Length: 424
Ligand SMILES: *[C@@H]1O[C@H](CO)[C@@H](O)[C@H](O)[C@H]1NC(C)=O
Ligand SMILES: *[C@@H]1O[C@H](CO)[C@@H](O)[C@H](O)[C@H]1NC(C)=O
Ligand SMILES: *[C@@H]1O[C@H](CO)[C@@H](O)[C@H](O)[C@H]1NC(C)=O
Ligand SMILES: *[C@@H]1O[C@H](CO)[C@@H](O)[C@H](O)[C@H]1NC(C)=O
Ligand SMILES: *[C@@H]1O[C@H](CO)[C@@H](O)[C@H](O)[C@H]1NC(C)=O
Ligand SMILES: *[C@@H]1O[C@H](CO)[C@@H](O)[C@H](O)[C@H]1NC(C)=O
Ligand SMILES: *[C@@H]1O[C@H](CO)[C@@H](O)[C@H](O)[C@H]1NC(C)=O
Image 1 (tube, rainbow, N blue to C red):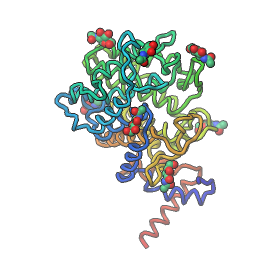
Image 2: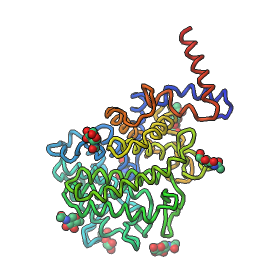
Image 3: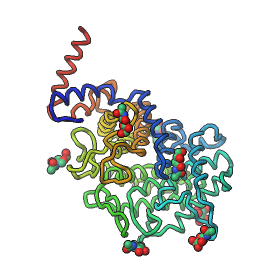
Image 4: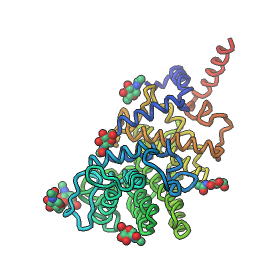
């Protein structure tokens, strides 16, 4: 489809002009596809965060103001999609087996991954908050959240360093964990004024970094144990880790313990920067990342690239630094050029077989929604750090048109011709 022949490339690039900044109508299609195709626990959890970030931005920890102060008096009818996801989760939840755990621990969902169901924990806590522990399938939202917390703290196997395993059957570190679990622990701690849990969220990030970070500052995907193994620098895994740590950072910031935990916040900030700074030189000329960051022979993955764009822009809106804005805009413009007319993100990794290219990605749909939510917030805050003089930073000056060496010159000619044609 993407021919190297300059003329065909020129035509392809020209036909993508309007697609680099998704129209609201195409973004709606992306959102609708997201709603339809997410099925696994972590996909539903990620989707719940994408919905919060795009439809209820004042309620996310990425907000410019404390989301916790907005919860008083919030009604379940004001966040119906979030309640819907929490309710589905409780409908699918296994009946609590109280003798299974001395501490009353019980996973929200049956899953070989101990960590993934925790990604739904914030949605469940919001349902508890707005319904006063209403029961679904015989268990209250708050009680289910408590059981999930206790499961993570007391039942899941740990590594020798104290890292909570990503997997239920044996201690294994997966970079994905950092998005699934620490943000839930931190959110629970902030909501219930429990500093121990905020500290545990921070500590788990630290332990995962110790276990997965390689000498070039980027993170391996899966280490330890005898299960699935992947020592490669998976772009989505690095994005999961950076985004999870940013969620923990901002949750601490909006908690009542921010002033007590400034050193933890500055550690998290530098660990996030470490991933972004070391990924930056590996951005391709097209403005995307390879599935395995440092391996030019691995395919280009738009899904992990979209999450990097979202988080790079959030780092700016949260006033940490604007350094990653130019690359995030390049990423988002290029990612957008791979959204097809039915609203699917294409050129994605297969999320169920992460070394292989797939044809679509449920989590990738959520990442695009998150990236546009971040872009809108960044835009509304005055586009800090933009180096583009263009009216539309994702528009025609974007990197999507520098995809193949030499084509941008041709494109200039193409645009001139198009301009001529439109005048004629
Ligand atoms: C995820 O959400 C979908 C759509 O609502 C639902 O069909 C599915 O059962 C959910 N998955 C889990 C593991 O709860
Ligand atoms: C970022 O800085 C602006 C301007 O100083 C301020 O209004 C805003 O509240 C800050 N945002 C955060 C998340 O601290
Ligand atoms: C409850 O969990 C315990 C310990 O894992 C197990 O031995 C027992 O069979 C379970 N009971 C039921 C009814 O599932
Ligand atoms: C993998 O390790 C676990 C302990 O962590 C052990 O119970 C299991 O038997 C091992 N499986 C194989 C195939 O070696
Ligand atoms: C914080 O949460 C932990 C884990 O549930 C619990 O053991 C501890 O008592 C809580 N601390 C406070 C002050 O509530
Ligand atoms: C791989 O890509 C990087 C970054 O674009 C480039 O510097 C390097 O030369 C490439 N290596 C190979 C073997 O193509
Ligand atoms: C868009 O991509 C999806 C997933 O690969 C595919 O099913 C659909 O047919 C594509 N739409 C178009 C118009 O090509």
